[in-house]
Image (cartoon, rainbow, N blue to C red):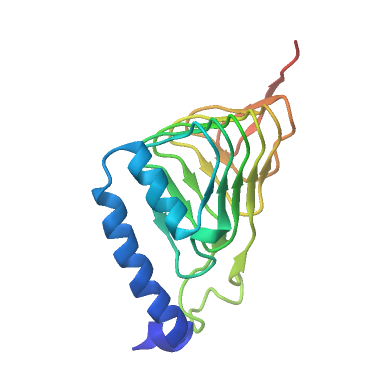
Length: 180
């Protein structure tokens, strides 16, 4: 099996474990139950959070311990979080439904013809306190979202977002600076 050869036995075992854990997580229909189970898996979650039915992938890579969620955060329905690398979410962050947070790029197997142009890479994503990410947006690997940044719905964020800035679009561009 080619996939097992590339990732190795240990990651293969980790893949099986995390797949079972994700199946159990799907059964958790209430936010407090989800939070309790995610903490058991190693996710650091602050107080007073609401976590709706979110999905994870690449858990066998960095794993659940690579995810930290601050206090008073809201994570909407059908969010997808790539755990190939770390994801840090600060306090009072709101993330809308169907947001995708990517921490890696990989076009396929090591012998894929595009590997020479797009080599596999992985970088953490940091979303600082007070930020808002609109529904159906995508945050790409290596992006840092500054404090109290506002990301408009359906945006593709490929570059860092400054604090107190509103961005939107594909790719996301500055719409305005936020001030008191």
